[in-house]
Image (cartoon, rainbow, N blue to C red; front, top):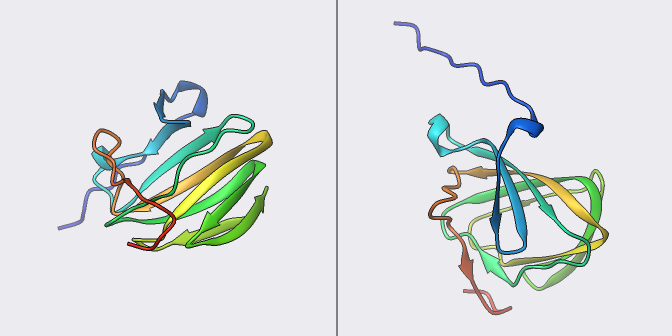
Length: 128
């Protein structure tokens, strides 16, 4: 029997946003789509930041779409500009600080991020 495929189309203008701390998140594909991953547009205002955190069960891949940010990933400082990306395995401690024009990223999580109960563990700068 052939598996049923479901095409998903949309626009960012018609996609609701949800604030999670300093992050403004739009879900393009989420857990309700029953896929092995979720896709989110994430924005931070100029100068905004979030504290060190990690995802216990999820991998994260992000691509900077616009703006810039400084990051610390597992204690190492990094700078990302438009076109920069990173893959973060579960347990990778990361913190982001948006640049002077803010930052916009496309983030892919696997397994999918449940925004109602996100897999986010706030941590000190030490590895768990």
